[in-house]
Image 1 (spheres, one colour):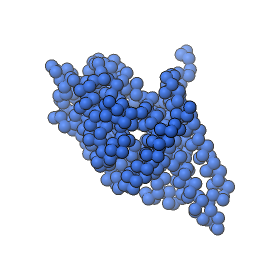
Image 2 (cartoon, rainbow, N blue to C red):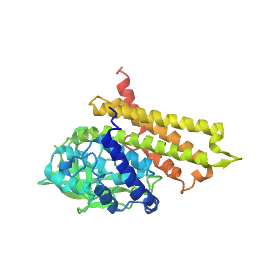
Image 3 (tube, rainbow, N blue to C red):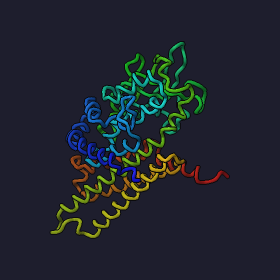
Image 4 (cartoon, one colour):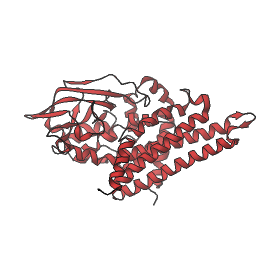
Length: 381
């Protein structure tokens, strides 16, 4: 059965596409200029039945599974949205799963429910100023003191940090290495929490990114997600979902740029003929279509096997790198085909060009993905 084309998902596609076209895309340029999306947009999306996709109804979600969440992201981008919009609006997709899976009802009621209702914003904080991919080496420390943890440290490049109410934070509660890491929910209004102004970035302009400092922040021990020392495994357990989501966003962005380029090249007249009549242009479009189709087909195949319970660790890394590489080629070609207009901020392909650059960095860099493949592919010698 086609996971992506069930009757329910076709209806979900229509709903997501219509909502994006009517409520999101017309305001996207305004949000890019502002450097953020209004908090009210989260409530609008929740009211449309789309914000909580992939989370159980019993905790305030809309039901469904990761494929449903991928479908919504894909349709938002194909409607003219962007991966930056997905990052800003669905940050809870990486901030809440650990809490939801923990089964800790007080945390679920206090954090998950209001976020999925669009009444609060949750962010995930792992990366630190002196380390990115080395999760096991993080230094932000949480020391137990009675019924509280006292947190000191800093996080950097945190998506939605400047708007977040809750930060699911990777902290060191134990000794060195992966076994000393825990996840702790920290409310941003606690004394000792300092969040920077939005950082200026190359792309994802509508998605605010900030730096967070913790200086003697007291957090109730009841805010710990799962058992002490289980944080690293919780983080790793969500890697497949995050990386496949990025792969979906990458091939969707590439498809959108292909669609825009096909229309542009059909409409644009040069020397008495449409651009598409030139062989070099037609061949470029054909190569773009090949890149998109290969990335989409492979990513969806890996998603299907992942949902079937197969071990897809190596193939997830391959899917992310394959889709990101395809997206890089396609967005570059799209800007080139649009000529001078493609370099202008008013051109949609220009935004996709900027936004796509982060996809090979976030969720594990291209190099880290290749290292994962190499380690699993080549026997130890």
